[in-house]
Length: 137
Image 1: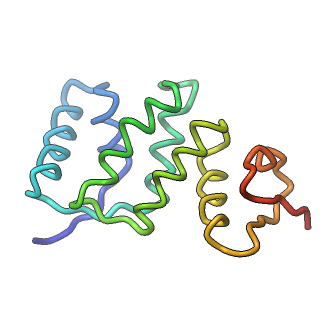
Image 2: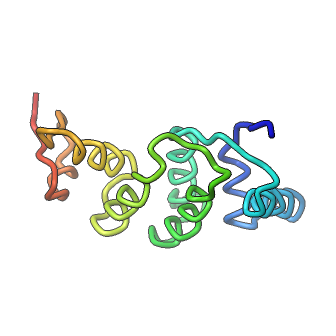
């Protein structure tokens, strides 16, 4: 079965239901993924875009846990192929529990897997993540 790439707008339409025309089509694709009738490749950049758009105060701004609860089950489908798939549980844990940016949570989850658990950054928000150490260059 051929794998196609999945864009952020399809996931956003599915999760928000904000389009009478496009949202049902997006949800139909997600149902096909759930049944194993389609396979997609999903890049970390697209995942970050979905989180960014959904968390935008101008557009949607649901609680972080709602974003996690909507997106994580899609990411965990066996028909959705993305690098470091299992890492997303930890990324979303940091994103929700510590209220850090998704990108910071992603980098922190990666840093936790290497020694030393350090990130060069000027971003003091990383100091809220107790499992990594921010180091200013």
